[in-house]
Image (cartoon, rainbow, N blue to C red):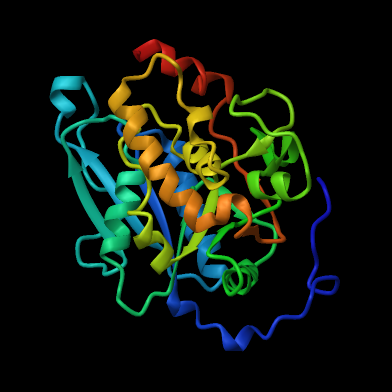
Length: 289
């Protein structure tokens, strides 16, 4: 399973000097097909966040095109209208919109929030004190990826590890080979969980929110090292390339071309909800272009 850091072996942190109320953790949730596994994973994730001392901000999106697209009837399932940490959005399209939802959520955060994190709701940290470890990194670096290694679990859970992936930031800081193509063997992972100082998030204009085929994570990761162009297929429209490169330049400037970024020294589990092959990370670009 890899090395699980213990509190005994980790540097002692002055936890009490960090106020978790100033650390906002956001997850975006949408499930137009209504897979039960997605709901189960979200509720497990929400409980895990509570165990870690985090009051989770959830932005849930449903779609008003359910009849036209043959979708199940849409209604909000995991959020409540009167809950201040819940945000409910109705979208006219089912194109990829995770980053857009995160940007909207950040705009609704209280003014006292100093740090913003966005997490996928299918992960679990091996340590409960990761928020403090992350805030500690954010004192020195404006952008932090929240793990060093991830374990992609199979249907049997934690006893079935299908693959191990280093985080993107761990990889580049330890001289590991990176590529913009997602390999089927062990590779760097560009997503799962990130955090920024709020002022940094605002300075870059939020996340890139027009990548309708997904790939926001890999765009962001390579933008950190001023190589976002390597993640854009050759056949993509010139307007997409121009806008992505302009955003990527802002990200690279704040990241110091990869010098001013770090990672949280913890590992995570990624819970099973289907085969990676079925997600067609590379192929879907060419399906639609």
